[in-house]
Image: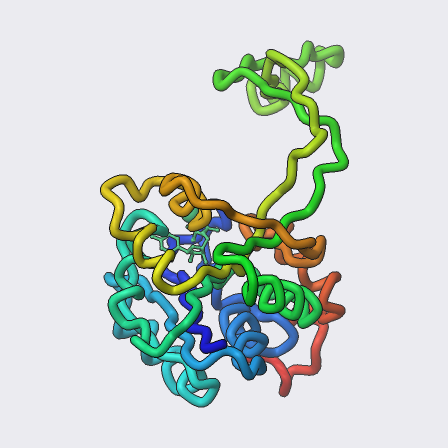
Length: 262
Ligand code: CTP
Ligand code: MG
């Protein structure tokens, strides 16, 4: 098994807020480096391609290329808007010797070795394998438009002093239906594919979607799920960063001695 891994890292961290989520401190190293370290430890992996933001390519290279090079990873130009563009661009650089192509979000630093074991083992007999976790919560479909509820101020004095500032607005969404959670799973990355199948999937006209397996499904080919890992969180918002630090048992930079901060 000769695996090339594409790591999309060209996103804009819009939901994370001000800063780039991939440079956040995770136990003394940037989040992106943590993600790559795990992949670089696998003997099945012979190539790691990191898809970087095209508009900040030089800055990204200055910041990461040396460390990534040390880990055996190469920086390539990603896509500007959609994740699939990043994967498509990186695909041009995949080694012709690769028997399998995997895609793993840069924003998922918590993937475990046990999960990689399951995934690579299943990929020896199935051409498309993704990790998934069962949904344990009740799932409801809700309205796309929200309705704002304005809290009635009981305290007239506070209202008079604070004016509009003292008012609380709460967004509500209307429940349309409850969806049966039976047989529903939340899908993660890494996702791994037979190299030829993956190239066929990306040769299609319509590449829109939220993951790579969708494109294989669009071809009419089967995709198989192995058990994922609840700790394999995708860092989307700042609270996810707090969660992933707890999962990985690392402290935030402010809690480390000054000489170990960066
Ligand atoms: N990604 C990418 N190229 C894009 C968009 C996303 O390589 N054009 C990457 C991100 O860097 C991330 C992964 O795809 O590692 C998953 O995307 P997401 O979590 O949505 O990250 P962002 O797009 O950066 O965040 P947001 O959607 O909040 O802007
Ligand atoms: Mg995004």
